[in-house]
Length: 579
Ligand code: ADP
Image 1 (cartoon, protein in one colour):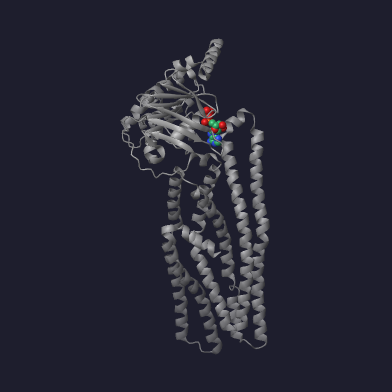
Image 2: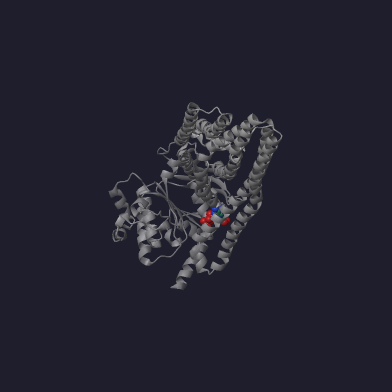
C-alpha cells in the first residue's frame, strides 16, 4: 500500500514538498490527539493515590488546553500546506494533458479512446483531486495515533501490549485483503464506466441517424446493456467488498472486547490496580479507531491507483514526433506540395501504395475516384493527422516531419465536409482562425465568406452564441462560418473536402462564392466528389485502390479514355437523363 502512497506523491510533481512537509504537523497532531487521554489517566492516578493538589490540577488542565490548541494549530498548518494542492496539481496535469492530446495522431481519437479521455478528465482526475490529497497526511495521523495506543498498552502491561499488537496484525491482514478486492473491482468498474461513456457519446452523437433509420430500439438496447453491466459491476463490487468491510468492523469489536476481557482477567489476578482498570476504560473504545479509519481511507486510495493507471495510459500514448526545426523560407523552385512514393496504412494493411505527385504554388490539384480509394487519406497525411510509413511528403521542399507542427499547421487550412463550431459566440468561432486578428479583419472575413449579412440579421449579431456543434444554424450557414475562419487564417495551402450534402440553391451559391474567395491565390488540394466542379483544375489525380491510377488535366484525361473518361461520360449521361 505504501506503493500507492509513493505513486500519488510522485504524481504531485513540484507540489511534492508541501505535501511531504505536511507530514510533520500531522505527526504532531496525531500525538496531541491522544494527549488528553494520557493526561486524564494521570489525573485519575493522582486522585486514586490521593496526591492530587491544586497546582497539579492547574498543570493538567493547562496541558489539556495546550494539547487542544496545538492540535488546532497543526490542523491549520496541514490545511495551509495542503490546501488546494490537489487543485493545483490537477490544473497542471490538465494543461499537460491538453498539450499531449494536441500532439497525438488523429488515429488515437478514432480508435475508441474518446470514452477513455472523457473518463480520465471527468472521473479519475476529479476523484483524485477531491479525495486523495487531503487524505495523505491523515494517514500519517492514523498510523501515529495507533502506534501511541499500542505503546501505551505496553506501558500498562506487556500482555495488553502483546494483545493489542496481535489485534493490529489481524487488522492489517483483513484490511489488506479488503484493499485487494477493492482494487480488483475498481479496475473493472472503471473499465465499464469507460465503455458506458463511449456508448452514451456514440448514442448522443448519432441520435439523428438512429431516429431516421428507426433504430432507437436497437441502439438503446446496446445502451441499456451497458447501463445494466455498470449496475451489475457495482453490485458485484458491493458483494465482494462488503464481507471484508464487515470483517474489519468485526475485528474492531472482537479486538476491543478481547482487550477488555484481558484487562478484567489481569485485574482479577491482581496484575493491575483498579486505577489501571479505569485507565483502560478510557483507552479501550478508542483503541483501534485509528487503524479502522486508516483502512477506510486506504480503500478510497485503491480507486486512486486504478485512476492513476488510466491517467498514465493516456499520457503514454505516443505523440507525433515534433522535433523538426526546418524553417519554411520561400523554398524557391520547390513545389508547394510534393508526395514522393508515399505508402501508408491505418493498420498493417496498406491503404496507400507508392503515391507520388506534386502541386506547384498557386495550382489546384483535384483528387477524384471511387469512394474508399484513398482521397481523404492522401489529404489528411499532408496535415500530419497520421505519419506515413514510407516515402516522404514535402512542403516547399522540406519533409513535413522536419517542420515544426505549429509552422506546418499555420501553412494549411482545411475545409471539411463536417463542420464543427464551438459553443461560443460567432465572433470567437471565426477569430479562432487568427486569434490576434482585429475586429475589422474578422468582419471582412465574414463578408468574404458571405456570412456577414445573416450574422448581422441575428438579434445579437457577432455576439450570438452558437449551440453546441453549431446546432442553432443551418448546415450552409455553419459551412460559411467555417470558411470565414479559414479566410481569416489566410494560409497558403487549402485542403478542401468538397461538400456532398445537398443544400438549397441560395446556400450552394453562397458557399461556392465563399470558397472562391478562400481559394484566391492559394495552392489547392481538393477532394472532389462532383467532376464538373474541377474541370479547370491544373492537375486531376484519379485515386483508385490507394494508387494514383491516372493523372493529367481534364482534356488530357478525356483524351486518354481511361477511368476518368468513363466516370465523366457516365456522370454527364446521368445528368442528361435526369434533365
Ligand atoms: P476516399 O476519401 O477515397 O473515400 P478514404 O481515404 O476515406 O477514401 O479511405 C481509404 C481506405 O482507408 C478505406 O478502405 C477506408 O475504409 C480506410 N480508412 C479511412 N479512414 C480510416 C480510419 N480512420 N481508420 C481505419 N481505416 C480507415
